[in-house]
Length: 179
Image (cartoon, rainbow, N blue to C red; front, side, top):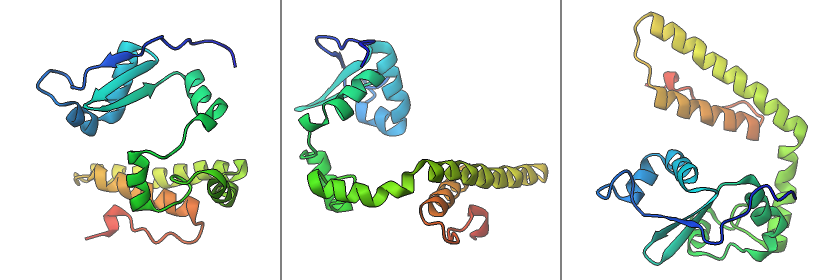
C-alpha cells in the first residue's frame, strides 16, 4: 500500500459540540451526521478524535487508513464493544454483528447476492424506479399537487431494496398508493 497519507502522531481532538458552545454535539450529529463528520475531517484532517465523557470515538477519513484498519489489520479488532452488544441485542448474531467462523459462514451465504453481475442489475432497477418517481413528480408538479418527498424517497428506497434483495414481485406500496 502506498504511503500517501501518514496518520498524525496524535489525532486532532474535536470538541463535543456543534456550531457553538450551546449546541450539543449529539444534536448536530443526529440532525446531519454526514455533514458534521465531513466538516470535522475537512477542518481537522484524516484522523479526528471525539471525546464524549469516558468514550473516545475516532473518525478515520483517508482511504489508505481505512484499508489499513479494516483490511490489512482487521484481525487486530473485534466487535466486542458496548455498541455492538446493543446492536446484537436488537439484530441478533448475523453478518453485521458476528465474528470468526460464524461470520465467515454468514458471509458465504450472503456473498452471491453481491456478485458483480447482480450489482450491475441493481443499478438498472434503481434507475427504472427513480425514473418512475421523477415522472410522477413531474405530473404532480404540473397540476400543482404537493409532493411529500420524504414519503416518496422512503418508498423508493424500500422498493429498490425489496426488488434487489428478493427479486420476487415487490409488495412495497408506493407512497402515492397509500391513503
